[in-house]
Length: 355
Image (tube, rainbow, N blue to C red):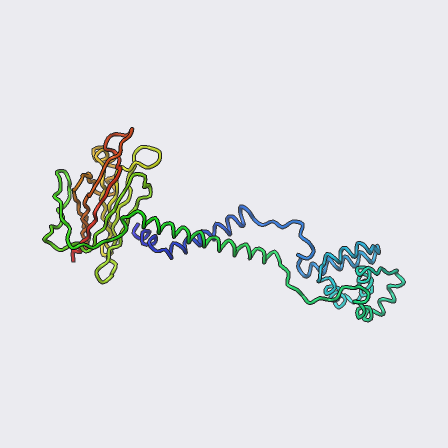
């Protein structure tokens, strides 16, 4: 539990974890599982280079058989600016069909030939290529970079990564603002802490008196009905800035149904880096404290303590002592049993070093 709290107190670690989770969900779950990219009705220009060459070769063979100039022009136009370049490469790779390629080139340029003319064109192919601009043929363009499905997927992946980072940063900012807003997260050092006398039935050790050393650190934890995410934690550091441990208060048990939650017990805890276990006590409402079933269920979490105004309880670890004092409290009204859930609770947490 302590390691989880330490992790949640590090925004960079949370951002990294959120990024990895978003990446896995966005890329693998959504991108490949729920909404995978499907390619249909792709044009010839989107094919691989070898498939474009194969398509153009079939177009040349088709024209050689049926002499359909309109169809040849349509298929050559589908190749885009790469058409003439692919024809030139085909002439080098398949010299045996050079006459058919020359005839296809003229047909694609709008100058269809008869079979007799094809033979003469084949003998003068260099001259025809040289006069291509005058005859209306397409010039051979320089190779251009075309977008492929892989580049589209890469772009989508980059967009998803950026969106995930933005969402994680937004969540971290919201958590930070919420922690500032809850009010109990700011630590204030004081010169002395007056000690209140424990009331009858409060099973705890007496707190230090004003004549003793002032607390090393002091915090205020404030709960208000409706704060369903209440979970205050504070870092305990020495005067030199060394991390000694943590303490905090969180919701332990609720009663009834519906929102907002009706809190009937809180957990107050002390973590000492030099101790092997976290010390925990359960601050209970009068109803919960007197209910044997609830008290037995919560006893596994820590020593049960009845909350009353002004009383104190002590949590001690190997090197730290935490005194928790009830500054103010109040119960909520409703259909539930009386004094069963808290309307508000303000606690003072003072820490001393036992070293």
